[in-house]
Image 1 (tube, helix red, strand yellow):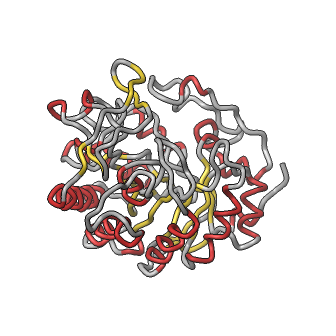
Image 2 (cartoon, rainbow, N blue to C red):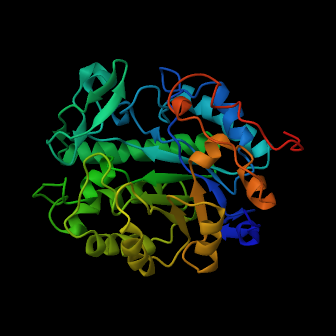
Image 3 (cartoon, rainbow, N blue to C red):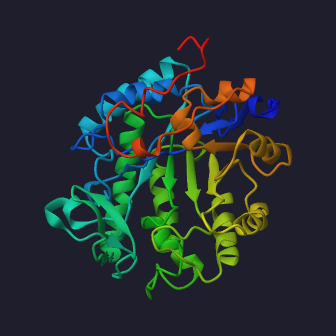
Length: 362
């Protein structure tokens, strides 16, 4: 692998200066405590990766109703704030920057994971043709209840509460997760959103919920510390849209007008090799800081930066196995291979025990 100096040119993202463009993607690892507090070993895990230009946390639910998988963390009560504060303090002490990804899974959940066996909520009452991970292993997602206007308002308030919790926990900013078939995406895409009220039908109506969430969290963080993640052509979790290029162009334009810290886009999807062409067609609709994700290595990332397509790139699996990934890219060093058997759940094995480069002081 050749050197990629453009990855190491500092850049301002909103009012935060990133020392490099090698960012850590949000990575669900299913190692939180049962009460949604991050496990003690998470402090080591994130601190090991503090040389990233920025860390995006694993998806973190905004409320008990936002949970969809076993052993994922939350950011809505005092104990969770205290646990995350230890992590942000440690990352900052190691010179890093860290954003919290705010998550509500919507219908990608199971009654066994929700308070008092409640049904999941969504834009629709149709169950997803998908599975989630529970105490019994993989199970079909439960049938959801379509949120009414009061339910939407309450969920918007949950986002605001979670944003305040993230601020109290010392995060540098927040990312609103509107991708990968979770709640906000379930409103954005018309293959799932079958509503006939003010939150369904036209793309302007379908993005109303996301706009209300952004208005709410902007009362907590300045827009220069808020990002959004989208997956315009993603089919994960039973998602589809009748005209993603046209519809997401409008969503991009709405986000562009808000002067956010960034837009973070999942660009590559299994079995959809043509996705990048549509993604590139969408790109001119967003003039702000743009983060690419999906299938990148160092050389592809450098090319995306040099061509002006992206300002930074997030890396997922490479960061799982290479806590010192920026330095490996800088030196053109070989990468550790990730162990897929330890991606989800477990202990320190496959979490904090991947080796650094031999002369790395860590």
